[in-house]
Image (tube, rainbow, N blue to C red; front, side, top):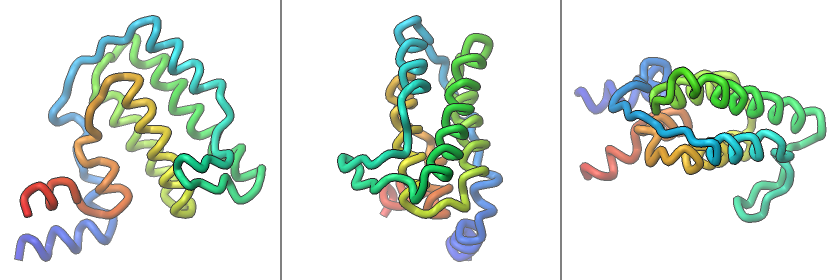
Length: 149
């Protein structure tokens, strides 16, 4: 019965809204090199065709610009906020807020948002979203389900 309830909560989207971003938490070391990499990402054009990820690019330039603005706002929030709060929970909380705002995009664009967020995690040496991405994208902590299957 608990599994059925989890499936229902996940498919309804409710699980994403209640999914924690602060457990487990970890301190981050934010160096000048990391800030440089985040600034480079901030300046780079985004949501253009990328065959490495089989991404055809945004459907039109207006959409691409909106998505780029949202991702750039995330990166700016991280650059500024990590100075005071260098924690994984701060990053994941900002990811979650951004993911709320892009939930209505088509699947290729949502996947590309996740790819950019994974790039940010790589820059910050964060090894896991603690299933946040899977819960947002698929409704369930798929990694935990597969690990315990």
